[in-house]
Structure formats: C-alpha cells, structure tokens
Figure 1 (spheres, rainbow, N blue to C red):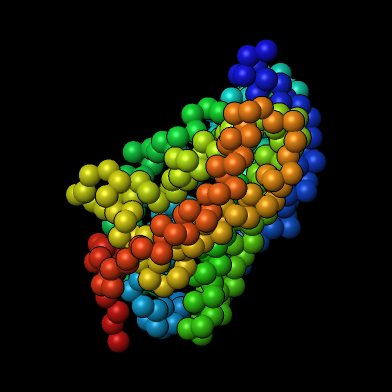
Figure 2: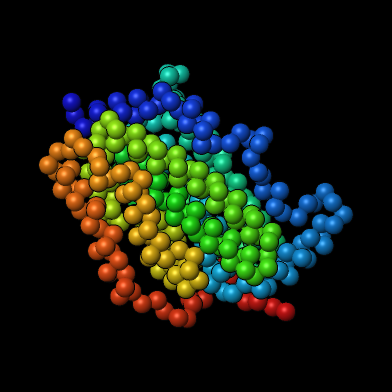
Length: 331
C-alpha cells in the first residue's frame, strides 16, 4: 500500500477517538478561563484605577522583556495561519461525511482555546502604555499575509511532530515570562502568562500522544518523519516576523537574541525539548523498524549531544535591537 494511503488509514483510525481526545485534552467553554478574568473590569467603577496600576507595574520590566512579550503576542495573534495550515493536513476533512470530519472538529476546538491567548495578551499590551500598538498590528498583519512554510507539507506525521515540539516551546516561553513577571512583583501578569502556558502544555500533551499512537501502528514511517523534522530543525512561527518597512522574515534573529538574553527561550531549551520528545516516545525502545528507520533512530539518539556541542560556541549580542514595537520606559 502506498505511504500516502497508509497515513490516511492511520489518521482515520485515530479519528475514531477524537471525542475522547477533546474531552481529555481540551476544556469546555463554560469552564475554561477567559481574557476578562485577567484584565481590568470595564463594568466596575475601579476600572481606571486598575488600568493605572497595570501601567505602573509595566514600567518595571526591561526592554528585552517587552520585545519577547510582543513577539509572543504577535505569534499568538497569527492564529488564522495555523488553523488554515492544520486544516490542509492529509486526513483532515472540514466537510463531508459525519464520520470523517473528526479532525476538523479537533482543530476548531483547539483554535478556540488558542484564540484566547492572543486576545488577552493584545489587550494587556494595549493597556500597558509600553508598546507602539500600530507597529505591533502591522507586524501581525504581515505575519498572516506572508504565511509560513515549516517544511511539513501536508504530511500528518511531520505536522504532529511539529505541533508536539512547538506547543512545548510555547509553554516554555510563556512560563518564562510568567516567572520574570513574578520576580518583578507583577503577580497579575504572572498568573495570566502561567495560565496561557498551562493551555500550551495540555496541547503539547495531546499532540505528542497523537504521535505516540502513530508509533504503535506505523513505527518506521513515524521514525522517519521525526528524524526528517529534526534534521531540518523546527522553524518557530516567530521565524517569519518582520517590522513595517522590512522584507519578509527579517526580525527573528533580533527577537531570538532578546529571548536568549533574558533566558525565556534559549538554544538549551530547544535541545531539552528534543530530548524530552525522544524520551516521551521511547525512541530507544521502539521495535520492528526497517533498516532506514533504524538509521533514523540512531541519528535521533545522537543529535542532542551534537547540538549541545554546537550551542556552546554560540555568542549572543549584549545590546538589544531597537524594535519599532516597544516604547521606552517613562516615569
């Protein structure tokens, strides 16, 4: 049977459990947090006092902190790109027979949860007084307009490797921002980012379980897909950031440097995620592999150590790039 047909059969096999996946890994609308839970309440007389407090606390954060928070917000706001990309994956059907649209149901529910992240972060930035919102909005629109190519094509195996990795990376970034906010005495922002991080961890757990199920029924092809994605490296959505007046994908390096300087998301984190996925999927214990897949496994097992040696030579500039997004602090 052709590889493409096998992948479709596997996707249809997993699709039978889609309602269980939704119940296990996603939270009903009535129970999950909403952006208004973490923002000044416009229905209360204390609304303006709450905004004043938010803006005062926002003055305490360093420049790189705001660069990372803005970059994280923009990538969350580009959700339409990610939803349309996932809806194009082989085996995902957004219309047609009732028993063949389970994956699109998952994607819609996942999108509903993710949509809250950009919403709450955007409102926080708007109220903070530290951000040039028009420049943020322009970058967000560019990111959606430009689209992105993460090297997965329509292959569900590669796409699930990507989402497993990317969701965990997003968890690390939001959780790192939460920790820095707490250290600076901003408990409200810390709680908000920690809740976002919690969503990302649930989503990571879901997508990594999809991969785990595929390893059980199609181990060799899943191993090859994992190896392929690690060889070409995981391209984060922020890779395609650009400021107004710039060409496509020109702001990522400076954004990444800011994240590394404040320790929110580093090369070490990238390697740690790779190692966690290797352990979670028990790559060293999978049996019944073809010779090609065995070679792919060998590559994967040695890769974290190789990348660690390379990362030791990495030098991060000490001075931040001045983005159009971030306003200087005022007193």
